[in-house]
Amino acid sequence: MHIIMLDNDTDFDGWRKAARRLAVNDVTPSDVTWTVRGEAELFAGPCANDLPDMPHATFNVSARFIDLARTAILHRDRERFALLYRLVWRLRSHHDLLNATTDPEVGEIHAMARAVYRDIDRMHAQLRFREIGREQKAHYVAWFEPEHHIVEVAVPFFASRYADMPWSILTPDVCAHWDGHAISFTSGIDQSEVPTEDRLEDAWRRHYSGIFNPARLKVMEMPQAYWRNLPAGSIIRPLIEDAMRMTSGAFVERRTSEQRKPERRQDTPMARKQARDTIAALRDEAKDCRACPLWKDATQTVFGAGPQDASIMLVGEQPGDKEDLAGKPFIGPAGQMLDRALEEAGIDRRKVYVTNAVKHFKFVPRGKIRLHQKPGTPEIRACRQWYERELAAIKPELVVALGATAAQSVLGKITPINRNRGRLIEHDDTRVLVTVHPSYLLRLPDEDAKAREYQRFVDDLKIAAARLGQCTDAT
Image (cartoon, rainbow, N blue to C red; front, side):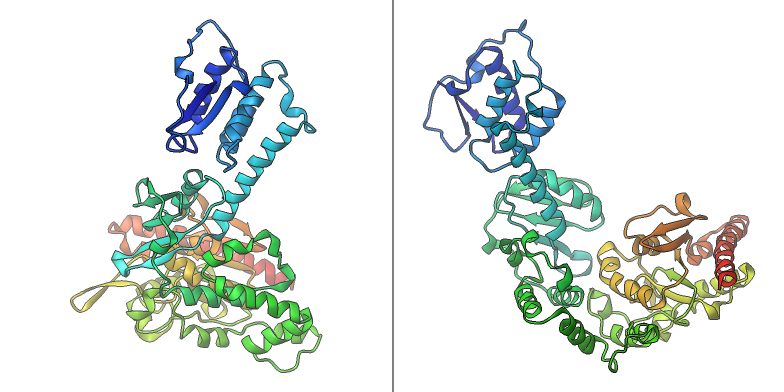
């Protein structure tokens, strides 16, 4: 009997080397016991390293099997190592074994791989970070209980999506940490050691309650075991029970009366249009927004301005010092440059809706001066609900994203400006034009460069003007 001891539960390289050495030495699966270091230290016996190398022996399996094994080995089933070696043993004489869909062992290994992929998808979709600390000392922490050993393969997704914020993902198996440069891992912890809920929890619960839709309810796709790990976990069951007690018509009527308080709805196009959020109602609601910490130091929420039937919606980064004090977007130096460029492009600013991706002024105090500070991804994400509701209320023909922060908010991802400017982008049934922010032009030290870039900015806005002209002709 050969006892193979792997270094850990996900030691694919160790399993692969041992399986190859066993197979070329004709060691049958029934003569092998697989274990993980720390589980069976008392057992002793021959190991794969005691077998001869047999350098002249040749044995290969397909890349397809390697990929399948690399995934399936992350499953928690204790028999996965033995099952994989049995398949290796059989593949020596049956090269097309993986195509035998009715084979029980082939079906079992594919089922393991699918379970691992589902667990990774759940982690990506359901994990929520909590903010610990304040401002520059903020750190983001999340707790997750994976069904399988997926943490090490799942966390690169978060390093890419949340690259500009330090975070830790804590699990019972292993903890992952991102410092803005590299991922590191430490031992798993008990849930009792996880920091308790913080000031962002209420915001998550309000957001989830607002977007909850019983018509799209699929309880089986989100097992109840995951609910307690979500910020909205405490309200999921009441929302489901409430939806089950009511007909969908009654539910819609109740949600409408609570959120918008309209008069009795009539099934006419005009009534449906009036049932939408109005900009005035959104502006009033946004005054009390506490979704991110920026409200504490800002003077006020600076919401969008312009007609609700605007064909063009301009989205900037955030209010500046003058906008913060006045409560209106784009009235400072950048706003004045924007006005001039719009006029040269043939666009009447009074007919466009102007807003920002982030509605509160983020700054660093320097004596009596408040220096602008670029919003981070958490603040952009926290404020995106307002952009989405503005977009739904206005339904513009075109959205113009002014700068990188606006493009990230509008398109939902980091978007290079120079690579995407000057062309219309289709995004979620909305046409988007990406260009620079007018404050970028103000920062250019060279006058020739400033004049050249300003003209490019006007040319971009002319694309919007042409689009506006097409829409006017169509009507």
